[in-house]
Length: 188
Image (cartoon, rainbow, N blue to C red; front, side, top):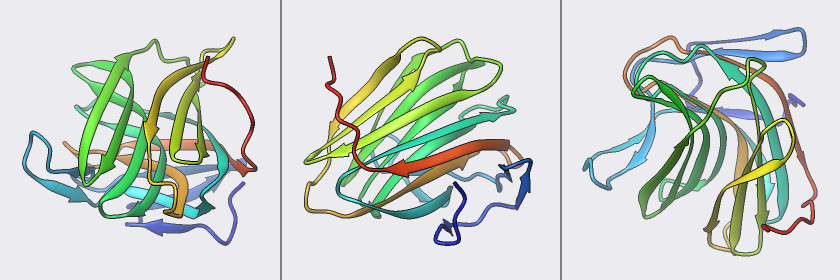
C-alpha cells in the first residue's frame, strides 16, 4: 500500500499514518492545470507518486472534508509537465463531482455530479496502450468516468493526489492504494 518507493511531488503541509490510512492536509491554493480557458498553469498540487510504467491498474479509496470551491482528491498519472491525468472528487458550486482533467499540452476538464458515499469514493485507473480508462465504484458496479488518449510510449508515475485551489487545509484520508498488473476489462 504505502511503500518506501513512493515520493511526494510537492509535499503537503502535513502527512500522517493513522490505522493504515494516510491522512494529508493540503497547502494554500494548490492545483494542477495547464492554460486552457483560464490562461494560467499550476503544477503545485500534492501527488504521492510511484512508477507505473505503460501498462497497469491503479486503485485508490479516499474521503475528504470538501467544502471550498474546487477542493479535490483522487488519483494522478504523471509523465511530465505537459502530459498528465488527474481524476477524483472535485467540489464545485457546493456539490461533489466525479471529475477528470486530461492534459496533453493543454488541460481539458470533464465532470458529473455524484452522491458521495459516507465511506468515501473508490477510483480505478487502467493504463493500456495509448489509452487511460477511469472508473469509480458505485457500490454495485464500476462506472466509466472517462476513456482518454495518452501517449503510449510515455512512461508515467501514478498515485494519490489532492489539491485545494481556493484555500489551504483540505484534509484527505487515503484509506488504501493499490497498483498492479493491468486488469483486463472492456469499457462496455
